[in-house]
Length: 310
Image (cartoon, rainbow, N blue to C red; front, side, top):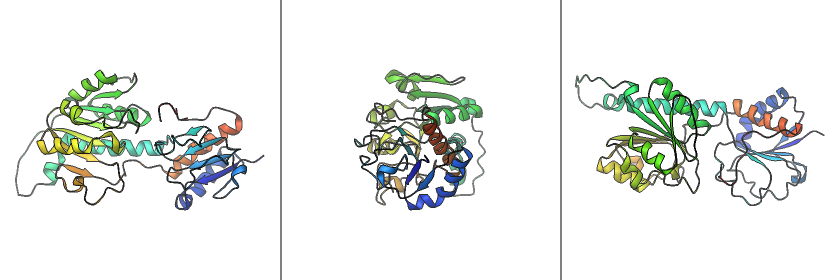
């Protein structure tokens, strides 16, 4: 029987995904029917974005899995009506986009490019920036994205430390974990990149206490999740001069409200959640592979651990 695949990620997304998904399914040998509209009891797979209007999964009695188009699952993982496997998106296009965005901003802070870009007077002021090997960068979060970012920064020559809640090991990269490891990592963090998931355990990872551990003038880059940072604590640390600069791509409320202090703070760069996005051309192959696996009775890729929240 041909599997019925419900695209429950919205009509706008459908315009981008219809052709790539159909092509990817065909390439995987999956003779499925994909549509925006099926009777719930006839659906075998649900392609999903957390912004979807579909919130009650109870009627989808035949469905085998929900396949999320986003890397983040915090808006769906706690849905009590969802009792079937949930797979998050690990998209090579998204990963590469994140690596490029983070690398650009790390190099910007490392080379202090803002000094040259924002110069207001005709000043000839030569300076020699340190080499990457003389700059300590810390990546908080060593999931798929964090590992790729850490490896790229290490390839540039940076002194890279990775931190995660549980023990991880990456060749050529100093890996720390746990509360003691976080303190050790932040003590050396001239530039810190946040790539942790949004869970109760990671909220306010950077707060008044942890920010104080960082070297004076340290820079913060957050393309991960808005709740990872205590906003008031960061603003206070910036105003006090302890934290040098921050580039923030994600926020507790999005779009970031016009009156938010981040918009006008001279030491903050706001970007509109553009660090990494799911690309239809590459994400479609991930979705198609999981559907192929489901039809073959194989283990789905990138399953969410509900106990951890990601």
